[in-house]
Image 1 (cartoon, helix red, strand yellow):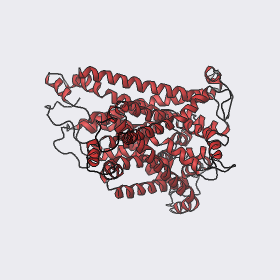
Image 2 (tube, chains in turn orange, red; image 1 turned 135 degrees about the vertical axis):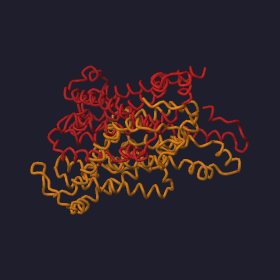
Image 3 (cartoon, chains in turn purple, orange; image 1 turned 90 degrees about the vertical axis):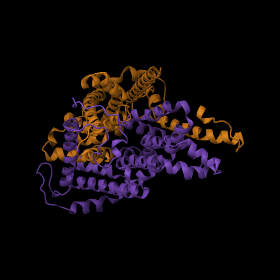
Image 4 (cartoon, rainbow over the protein chains, first blue to last red; image 1 turned 180 degrees about the vertical axis):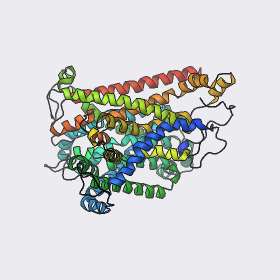
Length: 310
Length: 280
């Protein structure tokens, strides 16, 4: 157990630890000593072995001689050409995945904001119940939910029939196997990732600030733009990140709801690894995806001006 | 609802105000409703007559519920997923809880680096996590032994961060005056931990465990890369989706949904009762 320390009357642990960037301020009320290391060690070792080291393996694999195979073994030749080849051959699935992810994130932001706002300010005592309901679908299999979208959007389903009846869709128009279906599926599947951070930061907004803006004759829309939106920005940033990153890497929606001719990068990486067995090229693509996402995230976070989030 | 009805403050006609206030709630409820449409389809289809690949509701039957394991390979895959889910949950919850205590309660060099290490796996796309693990297993010469254990290793890895974050927020938000009271009353550190700290953190640990199980049970992308010939439930569904999904899959989906709702509701009721008892 921890060495006995005199209980200090420090305030209960000020900021959540993820946000403090400086190491070890002296008066946080935290205990010093070896115990901290011992408690952290197992998790840190696990993550080092199975998250950090694999990342190094991925980088190394991406530079192997592309003519190697699982049977003959691979040779490290620093073949940077793997990257050029991979990007040249697969830049469309790469951009497509990023575009799908961005479109889905935008839809999630609109839907998620309405829902999070309603829960934070309008739900009253039903708040907790509504929050539970937001997460509830998340506990049913991702694949099954996506397969049900396949049923819902099917060519002779109600949705397509209705759209055709309203002439929003041509008589032989369809939703399945189109980018619309893929984006809709992604937006659906990742909605909770948007709603929860949005709710967390909208819920912190003091409603009196919004009242004050209306007392000062601000139109509700102006009040929203000048008060609510800026104050909810941290939630917007983390919600969009939590939605965009998995959505850009996902290939389940594209494969189940999209057209087989319009692959996304995740599906290319997967099949290069397991079907083609072309590890160097798959690893290079994986690295490119990771680097692109990190770069986009950094630019975005910088523009949003909330760097302290990471 | 009471919050939605503040005392009428005269700047707007009440009708317009009512509409404005309830419009957001109505829209929010519509969004919420939309998230349940696919679940409703899953539940409905579990009672559907028909074998595979039926795109419409034919007629009501309980056959799927009576013969869940008609396709034995589905139940085998389900059993694999449950075993991996339980083991991954145990491993990740144990390691993650220890780490959360270290990060909130202890001070040491490299705390912010550790926070970063724990944050990153949540921020990396699954396809990258999965492919880098596969690259490691292949480089280490395990490409022939991919299966149950490699899946388990991967699942503990990606569940771990979520456990740390969940338990950490519970710990950080906890008032430590009760612990101090226990210490003041001459409880030993061990007694304080087992009698006071752990019961207070327990809801957070339980929530983290549930989250881990559902993440593990549901994972496809990472698992598919590292599974070798092992077949988990999501992999079974994926494979079946190419040739037509048996209706029994919807039974499993329905059971999962009902079970998780029940667990969450019981937890919610329990914490409500506790907080009421405390406030008395």
